[in-house]
Length: 190
Image 1 (tube, rainbow, N blue to C red):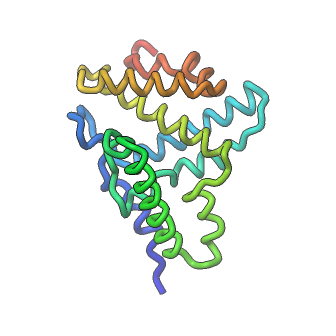
Image 2: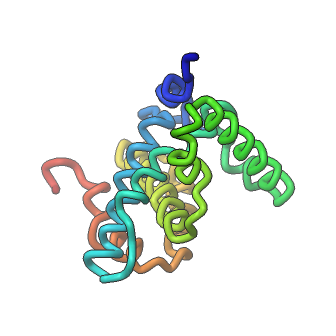
């Protein structure tokens, strides 16, 4: 039997993000997931090593790599639709859960237990870090688009920043205060 899980994971690069927006550079789910993993790892490191709170950076990074894996089968649902009302949001969560179950079924039985927590994150601390990293990645995309002169992302930049501020996560607040500005700078300014 040939297991299809990894071949499907490799197809994350074919799923575009920000489909309703004019982009100066296009981002796919694979690129996004990599950046979310980098940011989740950073947030967990800040939590553990700067703020001296409990965190597992490696688990956060691994969970972030797979946080949008369900979109391989569902595609990327634009945020204005996905969160339009609770019924749509809840229905889409069910679709994502079915997609994760289908992906897990494409692995050998011996590996499913290791991937299930990554696809269907159950640890609330890890889930919170990955969610913050996901929103932070979206905000950074907005900043990069604005830096390129694309005002299409101005409202999204404000919305994502407000959402980040409303999370009230000390590790995220530390990142915003100490690491965000260089994303708005060019290489010579860094």
